[in-house]
Length: 280
DNA sequence: TCCCAGGCTCTCT
DNA sequence: AGAGAGCATGGG
Image: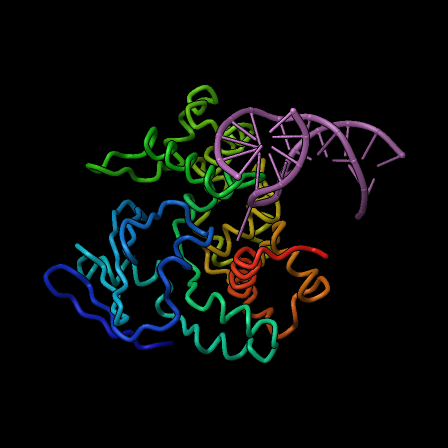
């Protein structure tokens, strides 16, 4: 546990002396698709049906604008994983020299705790796709089927999507993924799959549960488990990670990293993409 | 033009 | 159980 130094003033939340939190690294590293940079170290996004603008100042103060104390403590504190001591994790994995440099590279990344349905749906869309186009599809999903909150849109519920047809989803231009989105929505809306219960299962149980959905394999399932169900031992293996594991470790993640596999995965993913790691 | 993108399903051995 | 084609769409 870590003690967070924060206060509310004029309906803004101010956080001081927070380490390991870079906005770009956290919000633009491919774990979430609804954040955009609207100014120098100022980001805007929607989560849990709420619009948030936040800034990191030059003297390391984090400001959450137009945010009540209760929204901060009930939503954003957990969303940004503020309770977790990343310094401690980095220290531990830094016994390994490669993990040391990878974590130095991406030490501003925090693994978000996002909404389960949004995360599952977003990573279904992510398969065999690129981040720019994923964001486009997610935006169209929200604009067409989310709730208009006055200037921005919430992520549509599984119930809403489940009530639609494949033809309705054509506006997304999501290609072959539309039928997977629909299948996921129906299984979640009907209660056949209880997303809220996944955090109480082991990773293997939870992964098997999610893989009952058409279009959800091990990678998409692990992303959902890592980015919205606090299973930080989940380790999504995409093309980048597979490449990086080969080049950096000869194929397998070092033993000392397994306890924090998901967080380490983010460091490696970030490191691999930033350095455009290539085989040979 | 061709290739690829935070994979998965289906089919064929 | 392992390999390989096909998949929708759009950017480089």
